[in-house]
Length: 474
Ligand code: ARG
Image (cartoon, rainbow, N blue to C red; front, side, top):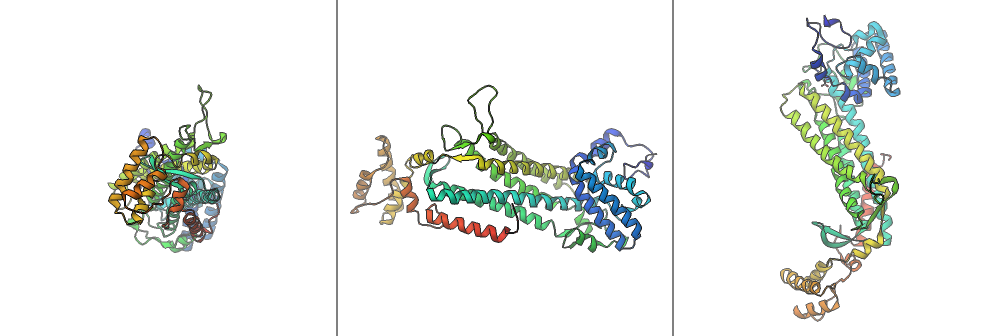
């Protein structure tokens, strides 16, 4: 009879052994091994709740706690996973329970009193989410701080860049402006992770049992406090099936990698000889097995791909949840597996991005040389007409015609164009930026690429990061 088995936590009512293929199909051990340390923390808090409620005596509690401390040490030393795999346990919770029963003898038989894997999984997942959200926040913050510092240092040398829209030359900006933009987007990524870490401290499911609570007097408040939550959850039916924080974490991770991917796209392009704006250090580049000349920006290409994977995983995880009624249903095992896989993959990719980004060397002279190409000052010339009283439509049409003429003569816009435009608009004269540096200086609005405005934005973001994340060391 399989009710005797030590590796499975159920079976007393079953007369047949489980079908091995179906048991393997239902196993979540591989995907939830990463949860092992968090399950131990959760189990120790449960022991405290049992002891404080008078359900187990102090000696059983200390035997259980000692056994759990040993399991924690095995996990930290990397010696837990192999025996757990060999034990035939259905999941990491069963594996830890089995190991505690081996280590603690009779006391071990009390560990699962008043507990279901349902409240255990929900609680463990919140502890995991807290840990990974904090890590994600650190990574995003580190990228934001690095790019902000780079923005500050390149601001002083005034490196120019032809900003594009549709990948077509649009308007000149400062490289510092681009770097500050990257910092802004990673600051938002850090905030998203930060909010997940906060939410993962709110409500502790432990003590919810399978779906309705427990008839044992568990000290839920003590368990919640020990685990760093604000308090126990308010509704067992909700809390055993709630995967909101796990999905918010997956969303934050996927969003952060999508951000990294968009920046990667530009870096990959800029590293091509056609652009020549950037060169990646050898340490972050890879070569070709055939073409000796090659130096490829692989880390950034892989980041780009991982954004697609993370986004797909997020969609998949949402899908697994959408058919699940309140309370626990086994589909949630797949939601969890996708959340973990998605988060681990996205964070690994974010860590690679954080490592690779400082290896990008900007080629300021190539950027400066091209910053004025493609009639990118045309908008400034039109703005100058508008400022002199010409309507926006007419200014646009006049400058469009001037661009067409200059293009036909294969030359940039110059003083002759301004003189002709002044005549056409019945102005005494027209002054407008004709090169990229003048264009950038001509910008007036806050949040623009004007060097003074960029300096202001860099200061403001730096202050905001200090205020919001001062405590988060990177
Ligand atoms: N391995 C399962 C999971 O990860 C554990 C929960 C099982 N609960 C149950 N009622 N069968 O979701």
